[in-house]
Length: 229
Image (tube, rainbow, N blue to C red; front, side, top):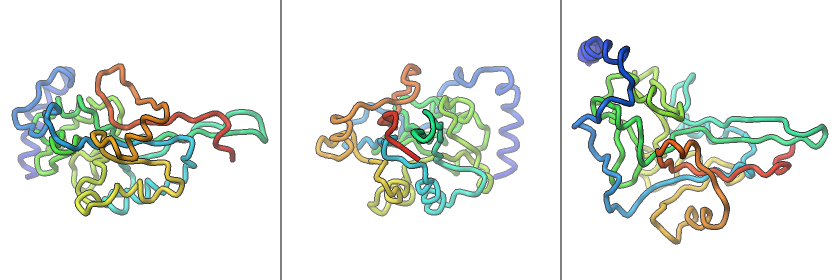
C-alpha cells in the first residue's frame, strides 16, 4: 500500500505543482456524489452561537468517539473578543468543521474517489482505503477543515459521526456532549424535525455561500452582549 501511494504521488507531483486543483476533473471512481438523488435524508447541523460557551466539550467528545489523534481535530471552536468595555464585555464563539457541501470542491478534485458525497445522507465522507494522501482535497477546501490523519496517513475531517454514532442510531457525539444544547442535528427533508423548525424560526447564516458550495452547516449569529464572561 505504501509503495502504491509513493508511486502515485511521484507521478502526480508535476501535475500538483503546475496546475490549479480546481481544474482537475472528477474521478470516474467517485461514487455516491450525485446530490440530485431522491433520498429521504439530507443531514445538516445548526450551531447557535448565542448558546455556545466555548467549553470545547464537543471537541473532546468528537476526539474520543472517533479516535482522533492529538495534534489534529475534526471540529474546533473559535473564540473572538472580548468586545466592549470592562465589566460589560462579551465573547463570540464559532464552530469550524466540515460544511458538508452539496457542491463539494474536495469531491470534485479527488483523483481516486476517496472523497465522496453519500447519496443516502448527503454526508461528505472519505473512503480511507482509497485515499493516497495527495492532499488535493485539502488544497481545494475553501473552509480549510481537512487534514491528514497522522496515524492513518489519509485525509480526515468531520463526517457527522457517520461511522460511529449514526451507525448506532445516535446523534453525533458533539451534539450529545454540548451542555448548553448549542448544536442541533437533523434531516433537512423532515419538515417535523427540530432542525427544520429551528431554521424556520430563527435567522441563520452559512459561510462563503458566494462560492456556490451550498454548505449544510448553519449558524445562528451572536447577538452582542448575549455571552457575558
